[in-house]
Length: 448
Image (cartoon, rainbow, N blue to C red; front, side, top):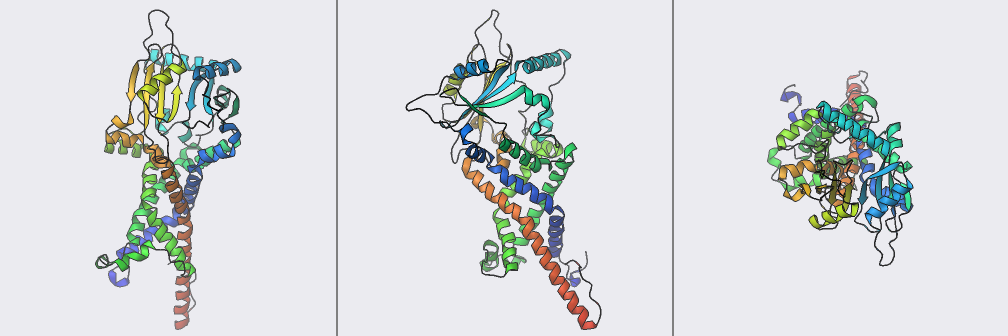
């Protein structure tokens, strides 16, 4: 760094860091932010476009058919498959989703798990390493293999008539899976894209910090004067195009700063294992800690006992979790398996904390109760990493805010490059002017 006399100050140094890091990572950040913007309302868009599959009309004063009846009818219609889970939305005009897996695949899975237990091997940590399962792994996420497509499917069913209205594997769902892959690993195979996105996200954090410094008044003595702060909060729409572009970058970037910081710091959990482990140590609770855990076993009775039905599990869960919300029931796999019921509140401001009950398939005994409100704050925070990143943390309200923040983040590389080009043009004009004054040729294209 040169001396103060040369005019190269600390603020100019911070500006150079902000400028060149932004130019270097701008394209990746633009792709990541644009894909994140598109992905925010994927559920709402899918349900609106594919209304024939997702929408149902409840009959007058009618109630849905019992869940066990729906399960039975589906297994009769698809005899080679077994219903392994069902999702029941709180909205009475939404179709229920039933996940089916072939009986051969289930038998193969149970044999593999039994072999693991006999060999004394540890449970697979694939999902944990990827920070969220198949969709997160080094470029291959979101692409189900040939066997996966044949072995499993999720059907959308009218709960009042048992009619199958569609399948979740549609063209639009595949489009959003591609958008997610673009967001997570730039659709580049082998983990390279994941590293590129993670590195660009780290740079984005630095850009936010340096941007905040540049947004504030240049001198400490100016901080006590409101007139020096006011331009940072206002977009001057009647100014020149250069000034308008500067305000769009400077002011909008400040307003989105808080949410973009949350998105960046949580998003790094999917990119780097060292970051995820470090955050877990800092918070004193494991990020993605519940993933990859095997369910608790049911107590198999000495004599053949009756297993509970889907309706029994739902009734037990509704007594324990007596509030309206979206429900996900995972049925037992095999005679020693247990059932799991997840419930999440819905609403415009609903917190995305999930309550989970693990139930014995014979007695209905609660083997484990994972209640969000009963967790200490650090465990609540780690369990909210994903909704804090995707914007679902506080219902539709937070999704709207995240959408706007992502939209602003998408514009920042564009307005930033325009600012850089304007500075280059200004520098070139100065070089030409100085050269003309001393009778020497100008050096065109020198960066500001």
